[in-house]
Length: 281
Image 1 (tube, one colour):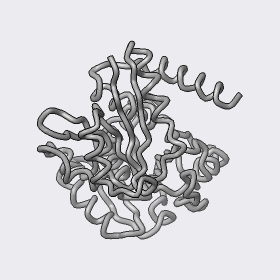
Image 2 (cartoon, rainbow, N blue to C red):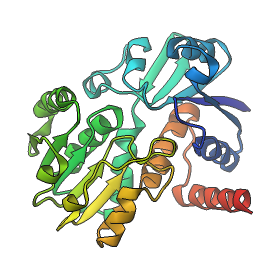
Image 3 (cartoon, rainbow, N blue to C red):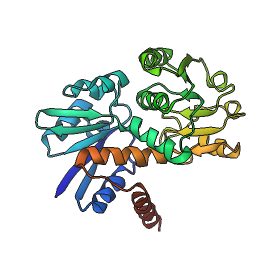
Image 4 (cartoon, rainbow, N blue to C red):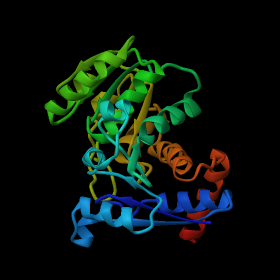
């Protein structure tokens, strides 16, 4: 059985999603193809690329920066949780149209539990309130964080996310902060949910002063895995949850949605490591 998949995004040339889904397919006895679809490189709009996928035999696509919010308007009957979350990274083309899910949210939850067990995230400061930031903030609430401090260069985005989280937060306090040094005072965890640090983008959203006294750090960026932020966090002896773990677990969730097949996380991790070694040699 052949399963045609793809990824739509602007800076995805180094994405390892093709390897993940092809290798997951191999583990499940499926023939999987996975294309990288970059709207600017194709001189097309996001909507036209999505339509190309819908009519071109694709079973589904992943969506990444900067289209996770934009794709919502193209979905058939998105559920209330997806609407509240306001971002979608996984689209399946059903007979009645494209349907969406957010595996960044579920994938972060799985990655956190895999790394830290049943521990609470505690008080968390997060840079970025865009697509992936929304997913991580929802996941932190679900994981039982006692407080989530939101910081974004566009304060309106942080305010909108805080308003969306508030009725779902229950035991989690949601706080707006103007800069990450302020936000990180006395926190247990610190999160980068901006594209800063990504290959082709560079930069670092987390000042060194914000790392003092923090217990754990997570960077949603995984290409490269060791961003400037995570490298500095490691030097400061923080417990690290890398973006690679989110990449792995969100991919497993997306593959299940695309194909109905469960993939063993450790088997897929080994396959991906082997593929990376072969590519480097």
